[in-house]
Length: 439
Ligand code: UD1
Image (cartoon, rainbow, N blue to C red; front, side, top):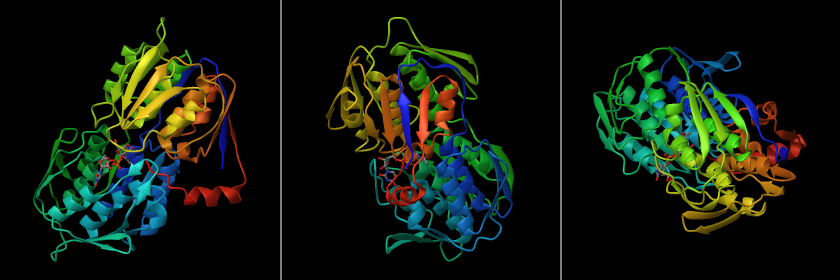
């Protein structure tokens, strides 16, 4: 398994280009299943989850061409299989996004249940309940969810009330409803920018989706969808991670190709904590540590537009360097504090009480051998390593490869001392594929 060696203590300085959002590209790729025509996506990040999603589409029978590195042309003219197998779902839970589109266009879908994952139990009951409201028959067979459309072959528009805000659940239902008969209303829908991005693509394909980005989404079903071309929005989690990289190293970074308004709450919180963030224009941010250092500030993760759970671990790394006591409360996922014990090994003072982590700062961090446990936890350890004195070795960096495009190259360009050590391929593939890596 590859690992990173980081020698910390260098202030980062320079320009970083933000890649496309993985969490937007994944549903947009799944949306291509809804039409026999070609869907062309630009600004697709070159990360492992995208390669997994591509493999799923190809296994189903779609063709995926990449005329340029970050452009995908997906044609699902001949789908021969209607199944997302366990082998793929266990490595990437977002494979479940095939469910809505397969069911909507072909009237049948079979998707493995995701099972347990590194950041707690993550059921898909809300996806299934929503599809049942649209008339699907859902059963469980040998670990697989098997869904069938009503006898007419078409789902029926209806009102779906989500008990809890779910991002991929909202996306699955939006895609299913796009080809349903009549109107669907999704109440308590997720409001993430990635939802609005998917809606934009669907509407370009001929769908009639209104309200995406608010908690009520209305979809008037159409009989068929066509091809479209779409550019994926920038990754707000990568943006946030680099804002913290500038602050935690006492450096100054300019981030290009981002959307500041997608990170409003995070930026406000970082400013409160003493990070100077300047919005140079609508797609460029500059971040540096204000004189006087960092101050402890509490956060609680909540659905968008509040503080994102996908930035919790990185923010915790920052708080180890802030003056005072901060509390970090995780309300979205259980068991999402595994990075805390790894940072304790680097000298951080963090206590866990239920869903809350209490961080005492500032504490000088020292390099250690640590292990990444999930995608965002690995980003947190990279940040801690950049701030630490001496060498940090991060194992299992395949987690970070799932969602960050060439992070070590981007960091090296702005002055970080980070190196990827590649290890024997045989050990690699076996251990990687058996690990539950889901985020
Ligand atoms: C998406 C993101 C992930 C992010 C998460 C929360 C993608 C590909 N992934 O994951 O990076 O961390 O949103 O912002 O976009 N839940 C249920 N039943 C369900 C569905 C969800 O109980 O059927 C619960 C989950 O266990 C969790 C909460 O709802 O506690 C939110 O999960 P959800 O928004 O569905 O996360 P994902 O869509 O999987």
